[in-house]
Length: 238
Image (cartoon, rainbow, N blue to C red; front, side, top):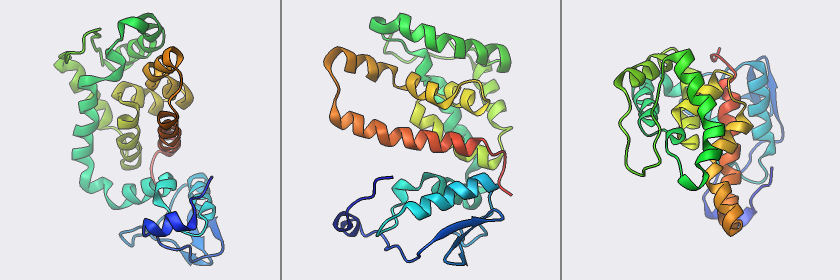
């Protein structure tokens, strides 16, 4: 992980790194032998593989601690401190993406390309979960069946607090509730989901050439998407 310069970190008022080593042991993270807690001062107890990944984020920090480069740490804190409190609001926010789902809006210039990638995912959602969504090439909002929205909400309600935390981060990044659910359910690999979510941008870059600023933003978004998808592989926090 590439760290920021010391001057830039200080300009953002980031806390200085105060520890030498970050280690995971028995699902807990230790900073020079002191146990890490959540921001709410609760025990930060995770599945072992996730604890290892969180410890690696802390170890990767250089002169300062930058939360922007610690997505798994942020997700773990939110899942433990906020998920039970904010669960209903998150459910509503995630489900709302099904009303304007990225997979349902097609660009006539690349509609065939979108159909070849998007349609199998939509067909799976309809056949497996009863989430049957209509598609359009118009830029105007398209009303989706109430039964499909109800089916999506019912499926999301089965998510554990940690899964819902991951979805609350993943779905907005992808712009698609269906694609987020497909990653969660193991139907679509995360790299394929990243490519689908960026299909329009990819086509634009092929047509007009790459945009360096857009590429930098996408690189950061990819890290966030991968972190959320990784977080989703753990059914619940201990």
